[in-house]
Length: 609
Picture (tube, rainbow, N blue to C red):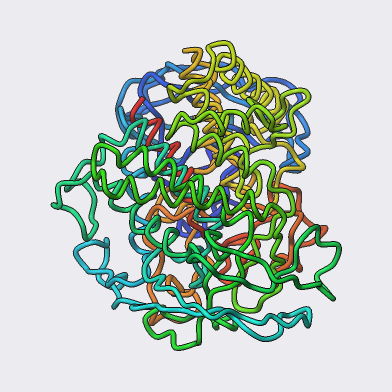
């Protein structure tokens, strides 16, 4: 990539060093990894001009290959900028050294290739191996030697937390312990969470059903390569095994708060049979400092109380796992299915255990509405077993066949606390005993959701399916989950406009945004460099490594500005501009498994297409 150069009016630019210009936001915003030959190509110009401006595409020699006029959009609420849109789809063949010129402005050079997202998909997937607990991360499996580390939290046999939570409630603990060795560290800390694991495992397993053949044995840098099993399945199993291990044995009773939580203080505890439920999470008893390598962690760790949400996440994940492994490892598939059935039944017996997230040392992932989790789990169990009781539960659910934005449906956009759409995706795309009319309704509702996202895209200056009220914690992953819906609409209808909207979303992630920022480490002229992560913490201590390539930042967040960096920006930034590449900004620049999962899904889907 080359720096932005100013072709006219360069007084200020001429005074700036080349290095400064290379790192400065450019008025022309476009994907910083280039474009797909024959595919959708869009750029944004930040400009107050009220009339169209002339643009040209030139090659490395300066020859003009295409030209046209910009489309003035005007003031854009999400970015706080006035912008023009430039569509040059279909104008270029595969090649390098292309530049976009608009009046006085010249873009960085960019490439057009047949498969611009192939490397991104594989690097995004490698986050999971590098965040494994219980196993050494070897040099041969990482891009740089400094990313290797010894095994951490080996032989992790934990018992339940007992004592006071941060709200002053006393938890009695339990009499059992579980071996929960393995799994993925969830985010910037070393906690392991069943709820967030659920949507992550589902996303990766759904990707396996669509384009998993691209990740056959020996294709990924993981410890299991060469064992005769698809490498994507091997990676997923590392965490699904952890989830299965979090299931509570038979005959266990615990004192738990039951029913709606009106307050996190003064909880009323009731002796409850929790057989078959899943512990909500496992993590340190206090927050560890930053930086902090996992293999040096000697802080006591505990299991935390079970919840209905965690139990249903286990049920759904294990059920789709049973389908995925049915022809690979029948014994493992049977084990997973039995655990899923047992978890679903345990959730039915305890439908309202909403464990509050008030413990020190780990995230909450609390959820006081589990109707969507019940629907999702029933859909996966119905797909796995075909049993009538799950279909009956599906038809009784308010989420039945629902999708985001569909009139009368409570099913929201995909995120860890909103998983109803995952159930509809399964019912729409997996052969089950569902009636053809019901399946068509599910498919039509997904297309309706995609149409709503396109309508949002067409109302936005940066042409992405995300509005000014959508920039919350993990906004980048929420956008990519919308791209999943758009991808499915393309599969269902064959219409190119849905795939183009997927590319629009990915282009935003890779630099076509208000900050001219690639939110993925190692990708683009201005990549994310300083994630909130205890091991990839070079910004805090040079003895620690910089992040590997392919790691997605949580992105702009103007609604949950809780960290010290975000608090200094409160009220001063437009929604799309509320972001800082700072290691201390956990509300804007943390990384997480459920964020990288849709990055892999979308990049892998575009590449497979």
